[in-house]
Length: 147
Image (cartoon, rainbow, N blue to C red):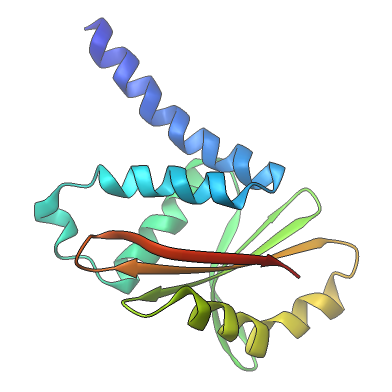
């Protein structure tokens, strides 16, 4: 029973750590912990995941970490996959599947960045491109820049 309780608390702490990493501006810690969570998804379930599934799981992980996030935020030039606003920081996150983190970052820079630079000039922007690999069923590449 004790082992199960400790194991359960460790899983809960992973989600809480996600929130802490974003509050602290530690994108790499956030991604590494996320990769660990995705690695825990059973192969039989993970083999059926696509970009929309990864996107949804990511949204749930961020919210489970106690952070508000918006999904599929509509703009005049498309939909931003996810935006999270935390204590003076805004994370603009774009997901790709079997493509590249560069492609995701380019999409943010070319389509969505101007909106946030003009609306929130005093907040720190983080542009995060994440690529999922459907074969490994996990994050294969990520890149981020401060905007």
